[in-house]
Image 1 (cartoon, rainbow, N blue to C red):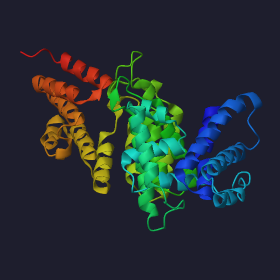
Image 2: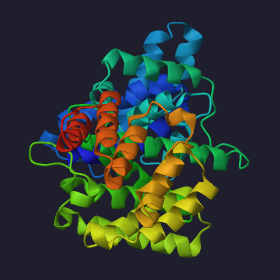
Image 3: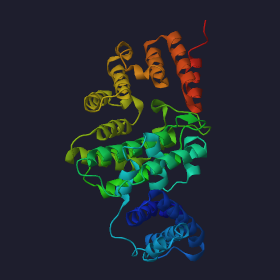
Image 4: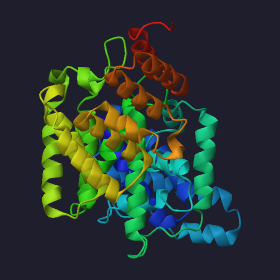
Length: 397
């Protein structure tokens, strides 16, 4: 597929240009023009034998044209005239360097996400804006500010001492992109498939570059094992179907098999990390033929290990659900008020409380909690589902 080919080539072409000419912003513009030219010419003329070389040559010519037009003075013209387009495809793959640059610590997480999708994913500003349901101008400003902050940043892998932290940022950005695609934070659709698919594609590329990194494999496994359930998460009308009620015959068996093999192999061969543990939890869910066969004791053990490894309010909340499934809803309710105050106004806390109250038989309190959760979420499918759960518990007396 032409679009897929261009997106795969985009980061490598951009990396080659930035390495040669500097100026991330101008090089990114040149690459976008080369990609546009390819999308118009290749369907008619055929894909060239070396697509990356073609794109690098076209983008380089565009970059030089801009330099020449902007450099009216003789000294600048003399410098530009001495430059020639790079050799056909460079042996060095700059994709990892580019990912590291897009996740520079000087950028906010929102800017890292937008810049990664634009520069590495090859998405247009409009596509990113539509995926996140924000104005195109907002995404454009984020990308512009990010590129301005990167002016002068050296296009090279960070020093060895900084690489673990920078890789952690890259993984976090890919995780954020996937999560927004799998469960959209707002809007009328539960999924934004283009985002989750892009996150999986980029993580595959990252694993090819860093095959020994257990957390990269863990993240890819987590994405595959989670995304495998997507076909069963909504009805034909788009209504949310919770995990226990899903038709598991609709789950993607190939993705489950690949994700399970990934997480099992990396747990045997690499130090255990948070993404591997999350993937292991997802694998336990996916291994159950139906909800009643879910091994909640193993899931609880994994959440306890995850909480000790990478504590966080959502991890704690998920562990409480596992406690309730193993020891009963009252055991979970006894812990829920101790969750981090940062979650106090989050719809997920109210939804979990509602679920546990319903399991405990307190219909009135459960209905109120479901209604509160519905008011707090901006996702239409989640609102409909939560209000539907409240309705099943009867009208207020």
